[in-house]
Structure formats: structure tokens, C-alpha cells
Amino acid sequence: MSKLDVYRAGAKLLRTRLHKSAAARRLWGVVVRPALLRVCPDTLLGVYRSDERFEANLFVRCIRTGGTIVDIGANVGLYTLLAARALGNTGKVFAFEPAPQTFAYLKRNVRASRQANCVISAQALSNVTGPGRLYLSRISSGDHRIYSSGEQRDCVDIEMTRLDDCLYGKTPRIDVIKIDIQGAELAAVEGMSRLLAANRDLKLFTEFWPYGLKQFGTQPRSYLALLRSLGFLLYRIDEDEAALCEVNDDDILRTYTPENKLYTNLLAVRPQCGGNLPLPASASAVKS
Image 1: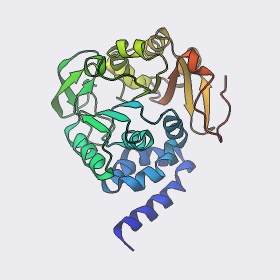
Image 2 (image 1 turned 90 degrees about the horizontal axis):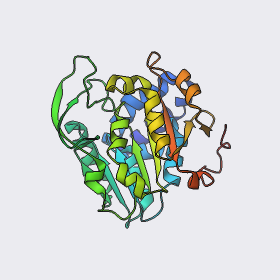
Image 3 (image 1 turned 30 degrees about the vertical axis):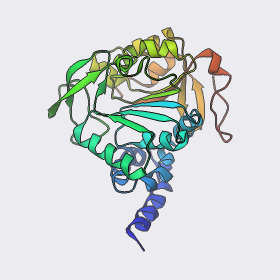
Image 4 (image 1 turned 135 degrees about the vertical axis):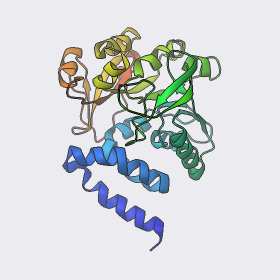
């Protein structure tokens, strides 16, 4: 049995156990999944959907051949590689990951996957362009932050930019943006206002983590309000029920609070797309 076969067998075994506990899913997400992708990207793409299976399906179903995808907080390339494979040779993925070591893994994984349609950048996305600092997690490559949270963290100098400065007027259309940057999402959205105005059919996937938002200096309600002011309808991605749930701001803010540190993921779409949500055939209906 080759080393690759061993990883595939181990990944398959892990997949059968992930839905049994939230702790197991968290362990997979912050420790096992990144390590596995570093060694064997193809294997991870095969089992990745076991902890975020529904969201990954939604994400891929939003992608059209030849389209343009933006992955903000690309980490080691999970969604970047999913998008690259779905786009085909004529599409393009723009992936942003500022952590030096994580960026090196991203670069290696893109190269290993032999995807020529990826453009990767070591810049951090925000509402300003210029120098910044990245505060590094010693535990997870998915928990580096562009702000100080008062913890004892090493930091590195990075370049920050607005997505508008990178892509506005340089690509004819953007279809999907994914943002997962540990509470700095509002600033990133503020930095893409021209692109959001120019791409009315764009779909936005974003983490909603009130603890991180508050650490960054943002009120969680303000982030929801910003997305709504840009014309988006908001849906919570329910992995357990494989459903999209319409977001009531008061309800979601009671469930996910800075105090309990819980997070969820949202899909934001404009009303003209609301009747054409990318639900997989096996998914539940949209819930109110």
C-alpha cells in the first residue's frame, strides 16, 4: 500500500466519525484538515465536505464555468482548489492569504494540484491599503488575525489592500466571494464597495463570528446591517439540516454572541438571485 493509499484510507475513516460530535468537527477543522491538505490535497478535497459538506456543495454550485471567484482568507487552499476545479480552464480564482507560512502551503498546494487558473496573493484584504500587522496563532493556521486581541501572539509585517484596488476595472465580472478572516469581515466588505455595486448577481459567503467581530472593534449587528444596506438577503448555512435558513437579526444575535464565542456561516444574495438559490438536490427547502 502506498503512502497516498494510507492517507486516503485514514481520511475515509475520519469522515465516518465527524458528525458524531462538535468537538470532533472542530478538531478536524483546525488541526487535521490543514495538515492533511499539506500532504495530500486531492485526498482532502475528497473528504472535505464531511465537516462543511453542505456549504462546500453550495459554494461549488454557485460557480459557473469561466467565472471569477475571490477567496479571502484562503488558508492552505481548501475553497481555492474547489473553485479552481469547478471553474475550468477559462475561469479564474483570486486567493488572498497573508500569513507567510500558510501562504507557502497555499502556493505549494496550488502547484501540486496543477491548477493554472489560480492567482494567489500574500496581501490581507481590508478597507485600507498600506502596511499592517498580522498576529499569528500558535494553534491554527485559520486563526491568524489582522488585529491585536490582547493575547500574547507573535506578529509579522504584512501588506493590506482593498479588493477594489486589486480588481475593480480589471476583471469583467465576479461571481462569488468567500470571506473568512476571523472577525475582520466588515472591513473587507467596506473595501469592495465598487465591486459589489458593479456585480449585482454576486453571491457572498461569509463567516459570522460575533466574538471575533467585537475583538476587531465591530458590533456584530453592524456587520449584518452593512450587508443588508448593500442589498443582500441573508441566509444561515445549517450543516446539520442541510438547509438555508433566513436570517432574523435579533434571533441570530441571541444564538451567536461574543460571550459564547459560537460562529456560523452565511450566504448573502441579492433579491434578484433569491429565487435561484444554489440548493443541492438533497438539501432541505429554505427555512424561515
